[in-house]
Figure (cartoon, rainbow, N blue to C red):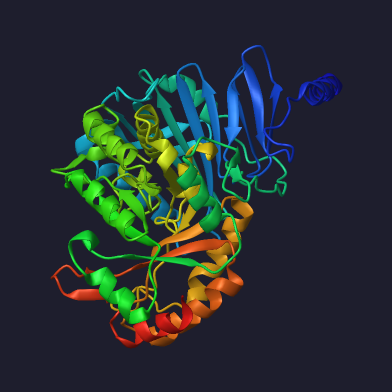
Length: 512
């Protein structure tokens, strides 16, 4: 016994002496040598340890929700889910996560879906392959997802992916060393830095190259203090008088117009929309979204190089127009209704970031980026509210977006599971959380209030009173002037700015 105790003391001192530098100054995790083949990873945020291959690269996301271990051609993401105080159980978490995988089986070759014994007990394992994506460097298309309940409302999920067939025995050996034996620490979030700064004349002092007009717009609308600038979504606004009719009624001009774009549309509509904005002294908020068609997720075709010509044409139009344009690539990606959400791509948020960065790269190559302000725009709430689907999992490179987009709607009470919510109820927590996580300027990229469930006129008045006073970093807000239909085609959420007409009176009184 005395010899074993002495060995333990020596091992402890050896590990303390050679502990590598943590991933951040706050010390989210530490890695120490264990033996000739393994290191010991300790995660101080979630309170666990695990044996990992020697010299693995270990990283955490800025919110410390994910720890990623990379070695050889394999990466392992570890998520500790705690459902305490949340509206789901472990059974809900397991069921809905597996449902996301099972509902997309047409994209995958499923190798296994069932119980996987390990040294620490049974997991549910789901193993699958998907096609290799030619536009993703070192694409890891072999997956193994493992989920286990830990007790006390906690569970662990391992997401393993590899460029080649997964070495399952190696993975199971590593998973079998997982222990919740580390004292947890509070670690401060590392905020995303602001990447572009300008002087008072809009001249860029740091960051990527922007045209003079784009830099000036960024400075005037996003980097200076002042009342919120306004925009609106009007369907096919360049083809009708609806926007100008609304502007006449509120006696004010909108600064921004919102366009939704997808593979269903010809790229010429972008040119037409920008030409309208140039004529009427506005800027376009261009939004690009992919979808599922005939059971196939378009995001995979993008990352396989099948849509290159389409994006190059988009980029060339923006370059030729030379007009400042806001660009949202795949907004609300943390919502399971989006085909590019991790829930629809094998629980792998890297698919979205690869998608974003690939489009960014094409626009850079075509010379469009000097005319673009990029907007990263998660939904204000995660659906599902699981860590692997948190908005922080989807962040592009911090110097590849210039504005943080916020989106939450007062959906009203047409559906029994939805609530009437005030502007503060929607945005106070989202805004305060965003201030902690981002140093970038913010905008509300789209929002509105429904007519069902409360007083839309009073809601709008309260929103306009609060926006300039309580939310100074929200520089631009865009009203969604549309209607969501239910499954039978009936109006469910009526967001129209003139329904009722008294809403226009409130806008006329508050914005100039």
